[in-house]
Length: 194
Image (cartoon, rainbow, N blue to C red):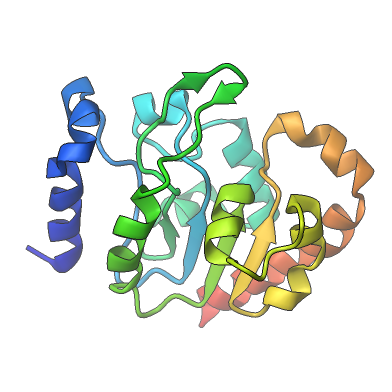
């Protein structure tokens, strides 16, 4: 059994994830030692958790478009490590999905990322990932962090969530489509080619 397989088993068997195991949920992430790009988002949505496929919705279609990759490339764990801040759907709250558990990423991400020596680029999608990974370096809000994307290059790039619900944000911030997305495609292309 590989170290990554051992980590997977430990996640499934962790008592803090017993509720997910009882519900028949498996940890929803992907990682292989040869991965070149890490995509770190919030947590799986209900549809993704039920299908067992991360980013299996309109947000995922938009994300793959921003990255400039095919479905086959994106879902190849040898190319893309998909590591949300929590590997299980957190449930529904009053204002949408509940946030990822605060202790999940600090517990599991270092163990997994430490086994991915080929990573060239980390993509931080949304506020939870950016606050955790850019601790002390993030802007005062998500917009300011994404606007300052050059400050985190070449290893990291922060993004807004590709949800269709963010159309107003994108309309108010046209620099994202004109500046950030082309740079993101270039960085992804270089990481996959290296």
